[in-house]
Structures are given as structure tokens and as C-alpha cells.
Image 1 (cartoon, rainbow, N blue to C red):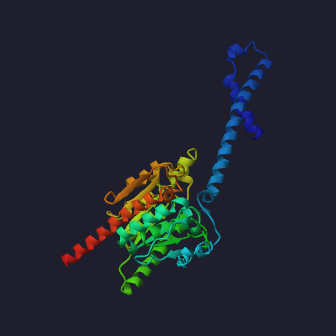
Image 2 (spheres, one colour):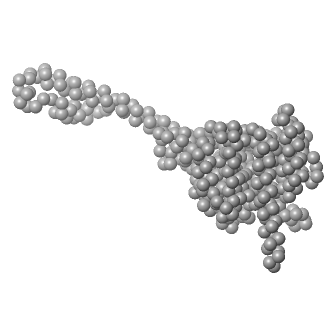
Image 3 (cartoon, rainbow, N blue to C red):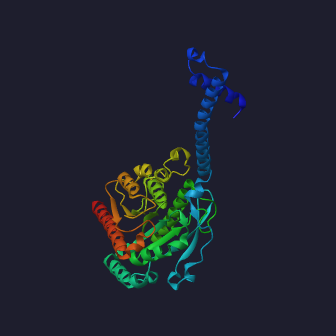
Length: 378
């Protein structure tokens, strides 16, 4: 602090703290100096800690601002080995390259639907519970064979890469009998670039378009029509909602349904919960305003939200905020008792699969009924 400014403050403080002129008449110069020094020491005792606190706040706030994407995205950048190296079960998984609108090349795994009537592979990695889950898989595929015409597209969370979702792929593909595609966003799993909100949504849009082209090629060969289910995991819920909203606006075909696991209303709300002492809304770049974007969804889009009662990463209140913003006609919220953020599919795999299959079966049946009704009117 410059000495001139410090001197001015001391003089002002002397006038404030010194006795009145009448009282001061009998005081000598040493008394006046004593009052000045006491006033100055008191002020500095208050100002120094305050200045230190303000400085520390600015340093921490600046560090969070400049490093925020490091705090928001945790990609594994290496390209995972093909899953067939883990188990022959995954021999049919195809690695594909999907190019976003800005030219960024992203890698994905596509696992085609199993052959109709085939037996599901047991999820051996579950251990002693695998046999019971395999029986559930067989029952669901027998009761709802129409699910084999669905293509599930996963937008995963903010950490890891597609290789960390192999078990999820197994449960969904073998349990429902549908195809599964997982894209690694830019910066993840060998994909080019670095992650940010616009980039993730662009990559998700490109993956949905790639899947739509594949469906059109299949239909041209005389195969049964296939429908897309967008599946958003954690931050991937923001990608799913954004892509589904764009589809509703006519840029892409509207999906048959959307499933959201561990989703939330916005990253701003998440950041505010984690850093309540920071002006998150002003500082955050990638806000993922999911509740706001939900207003653009098709009015009758079926949406299933799954959330763990023990989720310690995304408060369940933020999940319910998103649910409230979804179109009421097709939304469904399921709280999984005892599950956390990362173990939703594995806490009780049989119950999880039964919930998802029941929801999607109703969606497919609804579409079939609407198609029949439309044909009757023609």
C-alpha cells in the first residue's frame, strides 16, 4: 500500500477517534500521538485480514475459472482395446468413426442386436448373481421380442471412456435384445479434440445422424424399421436432452424414447451446490441448461429417469428439477433405493432391466398402435 494513501487514512482516523477540541486542550502532543497510533493499529488489524481474505477468494476464483473444464471433464484419452480381447462375447462389436460437423473424428462402438431367439449370455462379471440375471434377460426377451428393433445410443458421463461401459453394454444388449452404440466424445477414448459443451452436443448429434443413416440402409434392404432410444448418463443427460430437442425441431428424426440415468437440471445447479461461495452462473462456460432445453422436447416424448437414492454426486433434488421440466405426458421417474451415482445398473441388475424393458415395451406398443390407427385412416 503506498505511503501517501496510508498517511491520509491515518489522518482521517485520528480525527475520528481523537477527543473533542475542548477535551484536547489539556492533552499534550504525546497523548495525541497515542490516539493516532491506536486508531491506525486498530484499522490495520481489521483491514489486513480482510485484504488477505479478498485476495485468497480472488486467487481461488481465478483458478476455478481458468481450470473449470479440468474440474468438469475427466476423460481417459487412450483408445481402449477392442472388447473381444477381454471376452469372445464381444466379438461382434464394431468400432466405427463418426465425424462431427466441425470435422472432429470421434470413435464409437456399435454392437448389433442379437439374433432373434438366441440365448442371452450370462453377465459373468457379476459373480454369483449372474445366473439369476441371465434368467431375467431370457424372460424379458421372450416377453418383449419387439425390443429387438430398438437401437440404444449411449451418451456417457464425464469420466472414463467407452471401455468402462462394457458391462452396461452387456446388460442392455443381452437383456433387451436390442443394438447398442456408445460414442466417445471429443477428447475421450482416442477421439480427436478436447471436450466442451458445444463439442459434446455436436458429437452426439453426429452419432444420432450416423445411426439414422444405418437404420435407413437397413430399411432399404427390406428389414423391419428400427427406432432410436437416446440414453444419457450423468452429464450425457445434457447431450441427450439437447439432441432430442433438436430432433423435435425437425433437424433429425424424433427418437422413440429417452432414458436418463443420474441426470440433473443443469451444471450451474451442480456447480452452485459444490461451490456455494462462488458466482458459478457468471463464471461457468459449459452450463448444460438441461431444464431450459427440455422445453423444446416433443410434447409426448417418453422419458424414463432413473436415479439412486444414495447418489452423492448428483443430489436427487436436481434430478427432480429436470423431471419437472420434462413434458408431462410421457415422463416417468424411478428412484432406485440404495443405489448411488455409478452403480445404478449393478445395484440390482434384474430389477433395473425389468424397469427399463417395461418402459420401452410400452413405448414400442404405443408406436405400433399409432401406426395401425394411421393405416386404418388412410
